[in-house]
Image (cartoon, rainbow, N blue to C red; front, top):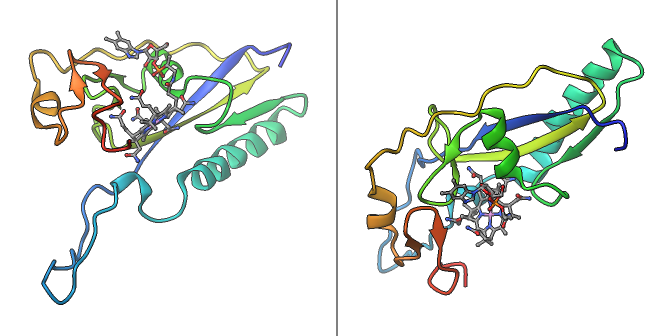
Length: 154
Ligand code: B12
């Protein structure tokens, strides 16, 4: 967007606890899916919310333009969220928010509207190293780096 003036950054928390966890028994084996994959695809949920926000902005300011991105856009969602004060870069390599930890999805909207910028968040991790110490595959190294060969993704 040639006349871009600001980026609106959003985070949406996802459920981190299952209310009724099925038991893993010999007769009924269950697998485990990462929390980020539970429920409706987050790309659709965040896009829908950002579209509602864009519609609202355009209703208020008819010349407003909006370009929405969730995960697969041109931008680094974390870099945007960190600069907007949504959270700080955690040692688990995710953006950590004060309210929901790192269990949030990120998305953003580039606009031609000049909004005043927010301040980056303060890093509250300090000496805490729990995520690095407890990563089941030992993929988190040196706080803020991920060894992709060890990540369960691969
Ligand atoms: C590639 C990718 C992956 C890869 C590689 C992940 C990795 N750790 O490198 C794989 C497939 C493994 C992956 C996995 C997951 N991902 Co992913 N992924 C992405 C994607 C598409 C690009 C990230 C990227 O490499 N960017 C390029 C690099 C250069 O930038 P960056 O990592 O964003 O870092 C910037 C800043 O954070 C900062 N920075 C980074 N590290 C550090 C360290 C320090 C010390 C400092 C000061 C700054 C700093 O500098 C960078 C440049 O400005 C983003 C979406 C997007 N478009 O951004 C989602 C994204 C990062 N993933 C996300 C999620 C939810 C996951 C999973 C939890 C999903 C799951 N199924 O479990 C896992 C988490 C694994 C993990 N611990 O990281 C979320 C993270 C949300 C959050 N709270 O931060 C994102 C933002 C998607 C979204 N829109 O919500 N992912």
